[in-house]
Length: 305
Image 1 (cartoon, rainbow, N blue to C red):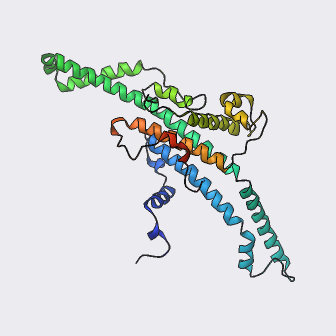
Image 2 (cartoon, helix red, strand yellow):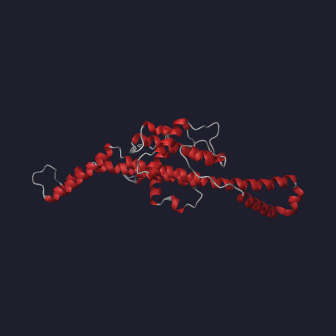
Image 3 (cartoon, one colour):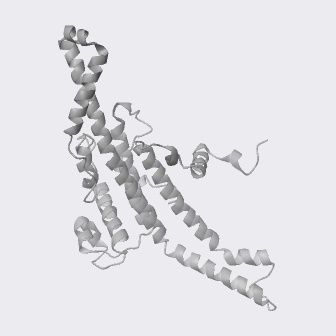
């Protein structure tokens, strides 16, 4: 029997989200699943922001709910002190929620965006050494393959097991000579493109980064520093890192991220993150699941954001 309300009516996406809540897949996942970790982290940040917003709208009606629960009204002439205290507390909760909603709950937006930038940083930082290891592995075995093709008799004498030992030894030598993996630094797409270029994952010529996407990413990576390290007060460094911020802020101004900001910045982070995933798929890219239209990055925010 299909119940009118409950789990039977969940979409596949909602069911997966609930399962992730019950048992976060990152707990059992070993290191190396940086792409899956990224999407899990992005979903968590957006989910908690959304849940906070839902909570505010529910709390906005706290006084009405308390009246129904107690069976009284705020204007009843014979309210007891107990009822007055309960209704006053409900009114205060409702007023807090109403003001937060009117202000577009900027702290919820800020905390979600901070988590999203962190998720993007972590994915890129983990991709670099992973791709270095993959490239070294490929080079070592490619060298053995070339030796097999050019010197088949010599290869036949050492056999495949010995050839594998040679490949492993070559792998170890190449691994030692690898440059230190770069980490995200600076702002905007440069923050990520510089380390990605180290392993051949920079933006290809036929898929350039739109300037307005780079500008949005420059702003949110600069604002992340402001929100975390400057108590939300814009400093001179952030304005130098993201000059477009000077159109809205001056040094010392307090940052309040509204709903339009959240849509813009979360859309930029979602789209650019998906683009990096697309590059990392290389030959495994199927053209659908990991596809993004870079010029449409402003539409990549979560529904109801």
